[in-house]
Image 1 (cartoon, rainbow, N blue to C red):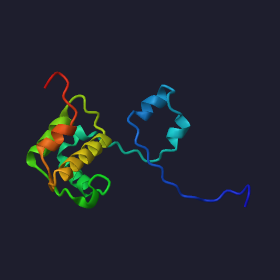
Image 2: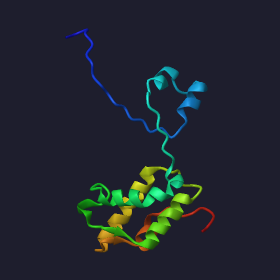
Image 3: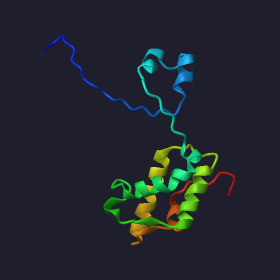
Image 4: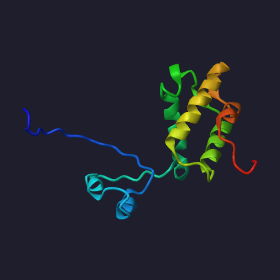
Length: 134
């Protein structure tokens, strides 16, 4: 078998936080590598998809990694509003991992208090403070 190539279909998913086309033009990313990416799908940051946030939060609550044993079953209305306000902030990077981290910590706080829901107090402990003293 040595020296013979074999067919091996492969799917590689990338999630860069930069414009690879612009980087390739500036010679900061290899053009021949970019050419191998056959499908390009731009997914807007969370702050541009506020209407999707409820579904995303629901999916996170169903994740074993975020909500072990699914002890937390809902998020209070004030908590959802606080998360939306946080996502809309100018200093929010639009990064799903940020939201994942916040939800993990909020689920831990709610579980520690023996509650099956996330309340504003849980988020007050974990949401980054707004710059400018707000």
